[in-house]
Each structure stands twice: as C-alpha cells, then as structure tokens.
Image 1 (tube, helix red, strand yellow):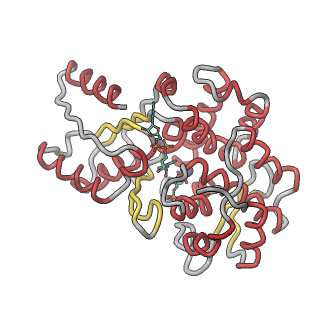
Image 2 (spheres, helix red, strand yellow; image 1 turned 60 degrees about the horizontal axis):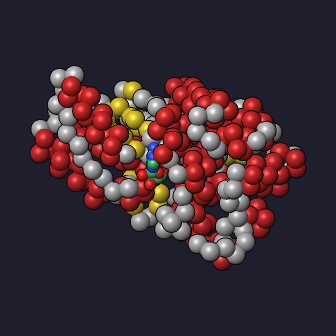
Length: 318
Ligand SMILES: NC(=O)c1ccc[n+]([C@@H]2O[C@H](COP(=O)([O-])OP(=O)(O)OC[C@H]3O[C@@H](n4cnc5c(N)ncnc54)[C@H](O)[C@@H]3O)[C@@H](O)[C@H]2O)c1
Ligand SMILES: O=C(O)C(=O)C[C@@H](O)[C@H](O)[C@H](O)COP(=O)(O)O
Ligand SMILES: [Zn+2]
C-alpha cells in the first residue's frame, strides 16, 4: 500500500499539487479513536483546509478510517477513495459509510460521508494475499444472495476463476457487486430503507468480530453471519431449504467459515443488541424471502435466535 500511496503522491506533485502522506496502522487497528486523533493532528499541522482533499489508499479498514477523518475534519472535507483490497473495491470505498470501533462494538462511531470519487485499479489485486481476496468474496456472495444470483452461478461454475486476479469471471462479479452497491446507496444513502439489505449477515458477523477481538477477518465473520441469517430465514418460514443450504455450500467452496464457537452465545447475543438496525430492545435481521428477495425480520425472539445458531456453531479455535 505504501508504494501505491507514494506513487499517487508523486503523480499529484507532478501535476502541481501539494501531497503529504499520513501512515496509519495496518488492518482493523486503524479503526481506533487514537489513530483518528493522530490524523486530525497531522491535518492541523499541515494546515489542511476545505479546499484540500483526503486520498485514502488501502483496504476497507483504511478507507473506513480515512472516511471518518474526512467526515469530521472541519465538519467535512472531500475524500477520494482508492481501494486496494477486494472488500474495499466492491463495498467499503463505495457509499460513504465511515467508522471506527470502540470497546462496545464494531463501527459504533462514524458518519455518512460520500466520497467525491472512487478510483479502482483491479491490477492492485495482484499483490493481495489470496486469503484477503477470498474474504472480499464473502461480501460479493452477499450481493449475490440479496440481489444478483448470476454472481452465485459464476462462483459455483469454478472457484479457481474467481480467486485468480485478472480473470474475466472475477472482473465480472466485481463489476456486478460494485454496481449494485452503488445503485442501492444512491437510492438510500442514510440507511433508512433498502440499504439495510446490504447488512445481510452483518448482525451476527459484527458480533463475531467483536467477540473474537478482531482476530477474525470481516469477510469470514460475515460468512458465518450469512449462514445464520439463512437459518433464521429457514426456521421462520421465509426461506426454502435449497436456498438456505446453498449459503454454506458456496461459502465452503471458497474456503470461508460457516460456523463459530458455541460457548460464547451469550456474548454474541449481547453484542448483537447494539446493532444499528436494532430499534429499542427489538433486534432486526435481514433475511431472504427467496433468492434476491431480502426482507426485514423484526424481533424474532430469543428462542428463534438460539435455534438458528445451533447449525452455525462448532467448537473451533478462535
Ligand atoms: N464502509 C463500508 O461500507 C464497509 C464495507 C465492507 C467492509 N468494511 C470494513 O472494511 C474492513 C475490512 O476490509 P478489508 O477486508 O479490506 O481488510 P483490511 O483493510 O484489514 O485489509 C486486509 C489486509 O490486506 C492488505 N492489503 C490491502 N490491499 C492490498 C494489496 N493490494 N496488496 C497487498 N495487501 C493488501 C492490508 O494491508 C491488510 O493487511 C472492516 O473493518 C470492515 O468493517 C466497510
Ligand atoms: O454499505 C452498507 O450499508 C453495508 O452494510 C455494507 C457492509 O458490508 C459494511 O460492512 C458496513 O460497514 C456495515 O455497516 P454497519 O452500519 O453495520 O456498521
Ligand atoms: Zn461488510
């Protein structure tokens, strides 16, 4: 990422702009108030004004942090997102959800702040470790289930093609996922309606990330979260067995996890209660009424929540 950031800064300087680099910790550690404060102090030192722009270069954690800093500095300055991971290309850099984590949970402090632009170079995926690529595919699979089954068909046709940078299959599913995300956030930027469907798998997913102290990747946690949402859909009569089973089948084909620890259920439930879709004491989940037919499941009740977790838990190393 450092090389890409240096190259972009060099290009900007060559075009007559001033460009300064601010380095932040790698991965989820960046999404911390102390890192945000460091960035604000650096912007102050540099005399950064509203006629300047933040350029974020990195994976989803970096783009979330940089977006939050840009949203809050001087009450909002422009940001251009340059996503370098698959997660950030298909999801994080698009749509203006920015956030940091606090001990109480994931993404609990943030702002909606739309980027002025998103510059996506698929060539950057060449250096992305395969495990990170596969984790990004979890977000792509999510778009497949909520909106575009062609994505699922493409993955089922062969995982080799979608896990190899540069193939037409990977390019196609990236374009599909990014286009759908952009369409949804354009219609509902502030998460009042249809955007909530993008949160498929994230209620349990974010709880797993918190309980695992962020030693689980976001995509892996969302993968288990989608299997859980599928079970919720199945046992509440929304989702047919074949579509519910298809979740774990596809995610396992990609090597993504479909289960989490049984012994931490109370912690997961507590963490889910602070999900942004909750209203008062009512938990709300996104489930499917069928393929590409997401809906809101309002306040399913604890018995249902526990029952749906049973097929999704297994003793695993954290
Ligand atoms: N705002 C949103 O709408 C949104 C959407 C999805 C995910 N997210 C957030 O994004 C984060 C996950 O993003 P992620 O999966 O990109 O993880 P990440 O940002 O932690 O990046 C994963 C790893 O890949 C490395 N990396 C990134 N690009 C690379 C490249 N081109 N070559 C080599 N290494 C590279 C990073 O340095 C890091 O070590 C989570 O915090 C999640 O909450 C936000
Ligand atoms: O853009 C959205 O809306 C999403 O829900 C996309 C998710 O993949 C992403 O992880 C998002 O950051 C989760 O948002 P949150 O509101 O649950 O924090
Ligand atoms: Zn996500």
